[in-house]
Image (cartoon, rainbow, N blue to C red; front, side, top):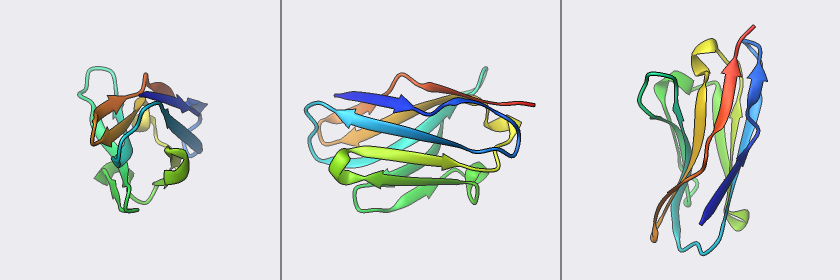
Length: 114
């Protein structure tokens, strides 16, 4: 199973970015796909997840600013990030949780700075 993430970059405070993550390979039933992030010197934390049933869960710090969505047919998950803040700066990792196990993408850097 491979997870290909894209969409990171440098953005000014208040700006927006959209992350995408596509899963490929031998994928069994998927429970959920989501995004985690890790800032320098901090532990990896949940940002948002999207379940196969369409449910979503967000970290309190991103509620109202980020929106996760998914395309089950394409095994793809998206994260729309609006009103970005400097504290959102981190490496964002895509995660897939399936019957066959849990998988991680390589990570994409998001930097929010003026």
